Amino acid sequence: MVGTAQREVGSLEAQAASITWWDADADAYHGEHGEFLGTADFVWCPEALREQDARLLGEVRGRDVLEVGCGSAPCSRWLAGQGARPVAFDLSAGMLRYARAGNASSGIEVPLVRANAERIPFADASFDLACSAFGAVPFVSDLHRLHREVARVLRPGGTWTFAVNHPMRWIFPDVPGPVGMTVTSSYFDRTPYLEVDADGRATYVEYHRTMGDHVEAITSAGLALERLIEPEWPDGLTREWGQWTPERGAMFPGTVIFLCRKGRT
Image (cartoon, helix red, strand yellow):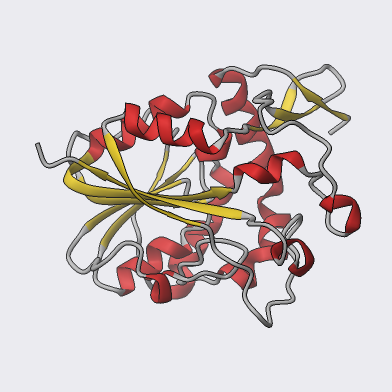
């Protein structure tokens, strides 16, 4: 990275940036966060909300589950351990390298696919459930297309549950400490954040959507929003993860989880 910028970024440039970033960052990411995420554990967010406690997906035994933007796929391996039939995909070959290593070390063989969330390579009505813990959704240019694709591969009555940065976090600097508690940006500025190289090419892209933007994109895809969860910072959690800190977590939410359902007709 040479610098940062804010400008519009289309799907092809965002895809190239995500591949470049996550392939290069896979080692550092897992060196810093791998222990927290585990090998076969489903952690929804830095607030340490676990699926084993929250049960947002309901009964998963015997269900076909698609994990969108799986990273090293610990969530899918946890699901397999609960009797589900998960399939996990990610855009980054570097992250999938860790997913394959996790399969080998755990002895839990989850099918892994390299794919783009805007063009999911599965047939219509292939899955009972879809889920994503901070995977893909913040990094794709066409959010509407992502939701349409997820809705397409879900069976009638299936659910799509995903966790992302809480939209209000956009207004604060992405740093811990007192500086990160001061509003510096407009909540309504949808211009994506990107990091660029010396030639101005994007090497990292992240998109901001308001809460209303998320709801509109979900419902436009024919999905119904059933629950919206804003995990609180738990007592006793002292671990920091970038902008997620106990001080900030005590004052405002860092994560939002959307639970959506496809209609039965």
